[in-house]
Length: 574
Image (cartoon, rainbow, N blue to C red; front, side, top):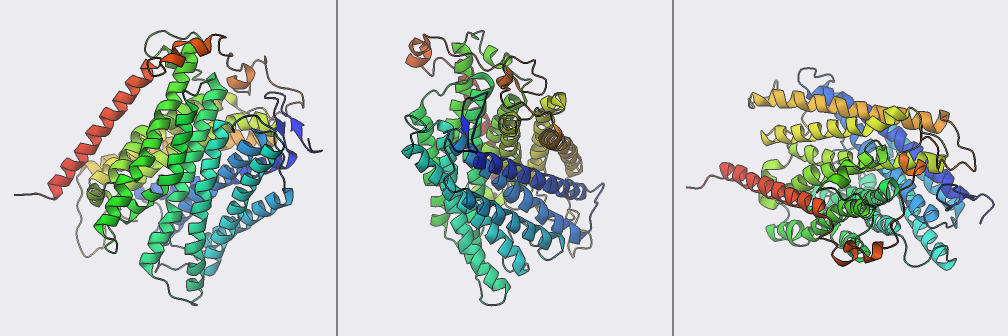
């Protein structure tokens, strides 16, 4: 144990002092980025809502750029850096081998983020998140992204080094925990993703300085290796948090570790191929390349997500049934700790990511169907269900355990914290569904004014579009209220919340300001659990999950073939 280490009184894990501090700093930076991106998103939404139409055209695209960079890059990656330190140094009770390296990495990420923020708000980078060439930002914008990416890449390397140190010093026995294995998956994908970022942004920086020329098609191909794959880091991190929250909140079990680990390996091998679905309407790539990348092997990554989509709720159901909650198909779900914000965030993340984000993502990734969805509101409707309702909700849920375990603070305004996931999840569900529905009518994805006022041509949408956009705005406002609750609770807790004593575990306390998983940890499995029906017939022991899987597959089939019907209406034959 190093001089700056401490022992967590709740879990008994050794927490390295450097990891402790870097987790806190990355989490705080992520929350600041969430605040900036959330405010920008609110203003953009109030502009897309034609009844309000708040911003002029310049500030619409400026804040749309701010919203994309802060939500999809800064918030997500800062939080994921905290996850990497937690899943390695904390869960393995390992030391951080190069503390100065950690500080250098964090400094580079902060410097890069601040540089990008300055260029965006100064009007020097109105190029949106994708920054497609020939749209040109000022050089500091690209340099800031490069610095941020280099810092994140150093953290990934540091994560691998911590795993090596933990193995050599035997701070754990057997294989690494499943949560750490999932974080390892995210780190491998991050390394590939960030290398794509270097391949595309270094020449783009030189192009912005008028030193070289760059081919727009080359840019799009390599950039999506960063732009889409960065969201696949989220998927691996999110699934890892699902397993972690299931264990923390009610003691879920893992049905089969080999299957779950194999699914993570499928992510590493195939998930980055999904980047190609952003290029399905590009004329420079042949149909065989498009079909190969968005069909055969991409479906192996889809299989991985479907495996996790089964094993996580099945593990929850099995854990409940092994502890005696055996009433009916869904008694295990009814008697779950719905007042625990960690648990409710887990379930809402899982359901919305799967039923809305997953189904739409695979459907829109089909080459033929993509042509009627590309660059309509259906696309942001999809990724708001995945990145926002899925990833962000999982991150929010685990925060309610990170605050007492890492920051050693009680959660302020705990009644608000308990309802926060409900506001955010319901709002994002409405928002994503309405946005996807509006895109079905052809409403454009990025256009400042969907009425196309003063355009040289007339565009008329169905009268239903105005109603759908209004519903979308209402859902967005509810979700923003949920996001604001999260920021208030976390910021107040971290800086002004009651500090827990060094030896205060929270066990047996009344629970005001501490989630139930800390106050009353899940009961251990009964001694005969290994001889239970679960061990012999795991699928037969989770009938409720099997019913949910059938409902999911039926929904998937219906939505998929409805889209083929919509396509047939466009490509009429005969």
